[in-house]
Image 1: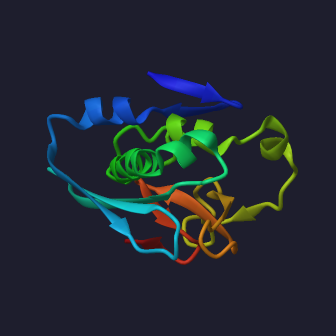
Image 2: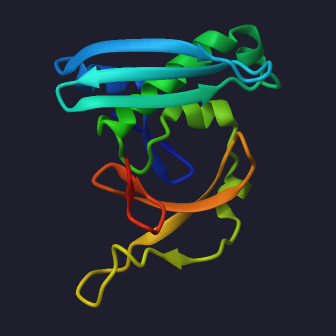
Image 3: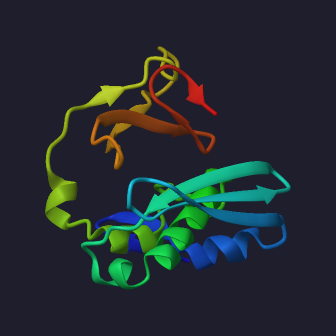
Length: 159
């Protein structure tokens, strides 16, 4: 079951785990050194292949300050499962991450620049509209869209 947050559908990590339970072969998590931040990488092996997800705890949020490893680990596992195609509805982000991020209605309603992927758009197809993202580690903005649950940054699919 999905959760509607500001008009988009998100799946919880628990639901992704439930959906993938027959296919999961292993889940390995590790803390990644990052200058004092709690960053966790999850590697999930399923019948579909090997997928990774990374998440960092935000120490300014109460629950993440109290349990940073647990929160980052749960989010990282959820992202890896999303990349594997489990529970990806409108986004790789899970309902848990959206609540954790504290995304507001105002942030999502801000007008943004419009871009279309030149690789996945031609005269016979509908344009592939790209979304804008921002790197948590570098703060740089980027444009992307999903093609068969894989990211394309306008220059083809990145594995």
